[in-house]
Image (cartoon, rainbow, N blue to C red; front, side, top):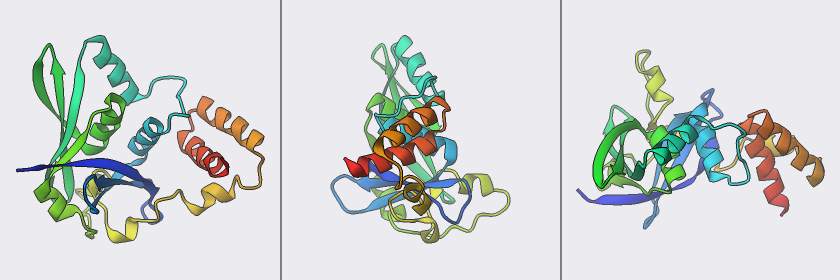
Length: 207
């Protein structure tokens, strides 16, 4: 089966599902998108890795994994989203140490957070993109409610515009850039990275 390389288009907050975020992956040599619902912590970790201006004062879980891997000469070479079962994506980390390659199972959200930290490419199989590269509505049962908010196919009504919620810019539009820089520093020091990302977006609009 042929592999298709993906890149990250962005993260969007779900207006209808509390605590859920939409991670949007783009087909690199095509127009299809692979939307995946992930949890708040994973969305935060991915957003921090994407935003170079935000540096946490203490390592997050994925940063700790990266530091651990660096210490023992382990490299994540690539991430492959290899399976889709009942609306849940399954991924693998392709790792290498001492020229020996190992495949490690991982949640897609964690795998992508690590891929960003290792500058590793992200792939999926063509048949998965053919199947899930469109908006599908998933009605989770009580038993799989946790999976439905984590690495599941994004239903059409969860997908919002590829921006932060409307309140994010409205809260900061009246403040000066100097005030925003101070708020950004405070948010990072308090490890409130969602707020930090929103402030940084407002600053970026003015640059």
